[in-house]
Length: 123
View (tube, rainbow, N blue to C red):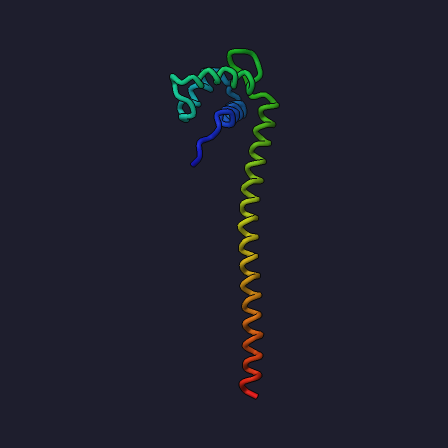
């Protein structure tokens, strides 16, 4: 499993909390990111949490809901991830179809040669 981006994880947390009717505070977001091991407690990246909170959430301080821009950005990100998965699956299916068509072409050629050989040998 790959490690999620801090911004995406923060937006997912904000959406989940907002949909449940909970307001999101700076401390809640920080605790969530630390619990998910996306940031460390004493790391310099912890200063990023305040900026993330102000960019992702809207409302009166200290607790707020996810902003519409952040919500729509998260939806776009999830749509892109689904499109990538669909593209990967389509590529795999296309490879299978190519190999099957190549095998059928070879088999058809071999069958034609076999028919010619049978016609010549059993005349």
